[in-house]
Image (tube, rainbow, N blue to C red):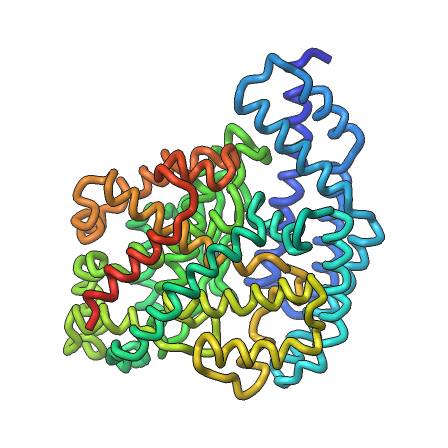
Length: 498
Ligand code: ZN
């Protein structure tokens, strides 16, 4: 085979793998959005079949030998060489997983998910404890066979932010503890806005009318996506021109639908901006990392959606939709209300500032479990003590404490830091964008988001996985991750909120 034929063959194989994975995504989406309860068993089996087929193709001798030979080929252009090198690295990592390990993990997590749901509703950690202990044991094994330098957590975090290491996460969180936590306490003490108008009755259809208007203005095209209701908001890709979002709403909680819609649309715009047509199923056509994905959603949600300029432009429309609830609430009061800061138990309902304490606590627990410094039975006490220490509150039961998140039941360890890192990346991109885009605040106020989206597309989306996160940040902002941008952002914002 000639070199260019080999590259085409590689593309074809990767395209098939992507076909299987995207088809699986359709089944997963339907499972959460439409599937009747009794479809669960069959669906689980079908999804496992597609995953197995995808895994078999990805770890096949055929793909690996193609990649090894292409890796020696000096005629490839820059994008092709990158795709080949990155795919080879991913194949080598995937091949470290034995079939026995994969099936044991799948079996354990499927049981653990049910146990977690029951434990959470009964507020009883003991129901979840044996299966979570098994999962932690498997994650320790996984770190061992993947291999790591320093801390075993390093092996796992690689799935969510390649190249990120415990030493860096610790350095960043040390700064967060030194600067953000005291700042958060100060704001929570002095800034106590009225939020009562946010819990009046907001009919769902009208909430959606407003949310849809906003995400369309952001550039989310309903010809290339759609939105449905689901118990958990998420974004999922089926094809280069079909990126869906789900949202969650409550009639007496205004914040829930709108900010979830903006957040998920931010994820969707990233997916739609990737060069997926040209590099279908290839690294260059795929999102950089989970953490970087989160920077895109948080940028839109917080830097745009919770800004004063945004509400200055949109508030009159919202007031007209809900005159009884908001007619007597001024723009300033509304803006203060959606930016209230208060320590609370539930991560997904936390504000922009206290949020990072929730993440830090989960990170400490995961790290300690991997290093065998604590065992699963120690989690509830460890959790409650850290909530007291960092947020000044203590959960009254594990349902509002260590049983609230689904991640550990899936075996996702190393994921949580991506939420905080995403916010920090977002603030850094925001600072650069303000310099690059003329009349940035005016554009946000007028709802002219196209130059913002264009900036993200040209500077960030177009590269896919081409550059490691710190390199991409350096290209776009002039430096690697620097939390000072997040601190400047929150200081500036809250200095004006009295
Ligand atoms: Zn997100």
